[in-house]
Length: 76
Image (tube, rainbow, N blue to C red; front, side):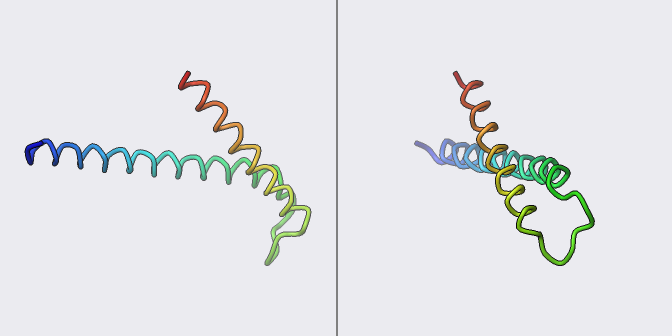
């Protein structure tokens, strides 16, 4: 490989990494919004109740599982 090929490869790798970071940030934002609205029903205090913590955990797990399922289906 010549130096321009290496530079192009490195640039492509960097772009792919930045794209993945952006997708992750978007997913976290959507997950936070959806799970917050579902699980935090009152005014939040200094820490979450045990039921809020459990709800947030399960909501996040379901959201991630569903996102992975959709991605796999789209790749097929």
